[in-house]
Image (tube, rainbow, N blue to C red):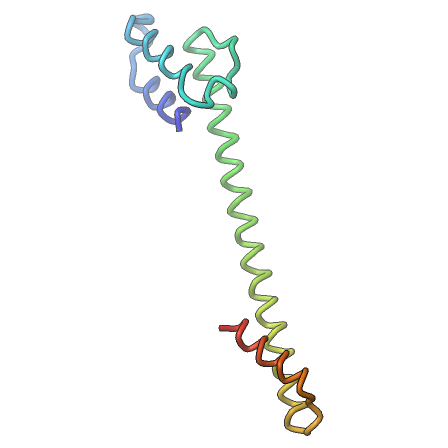
Length: 118
């Protein structure tokens, strides 16, 4: 979250006036944010360097979000496939039951599958 704070803060400032004491204090605070130092490293000294690194981090987070969204979509497709597979198995067991070919163990399996569908 610190990366987005830095980007917005920097974009709102007028850099033509030079680096003020407030900016130095802000950069000192950002360097101490939990986990941020591990990402940017100890060599981060200049605010401009921090902005470049921060934008790279923001880009990586955006890519990660896209990847997670893709995985979520694929997981949803797998759940639907599993559900249709269970429904097919239940209908096959129903057909066997109608023919009188279903044994007790298979009835239990069918009941467990129906419970899974709920």
